[in-house]
Length: 124
Image (cartoon, rainbow, N blue to C red; front, top):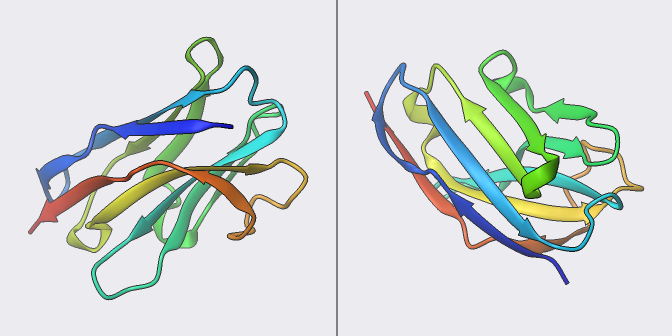
């Protein structure tokens, strides 16, 4: 069982940056891919970025490429999402998730463990 706890959300202005963290309680994450998802009001949940823990390979959805960076801290079993140049369209609840590493990083299903979410609000 993997427990995930997100932190770092908040209210910022357009153009600002935020850093989200996801602390994972697991003996090892080497068999997982870790993803950041977001869900805005009235919209479907979408994948934002993903990283394969054992290789560090990353994936980004097109709308965040060049602005967001996903990374991992091996010592702390933590996934980080650095978000720069935020705009109001990035407003959503952001979720961290863990799924099997055997699947492609762009795959949005087969995530078995989810955090509680953290709100990100970007004002114009």
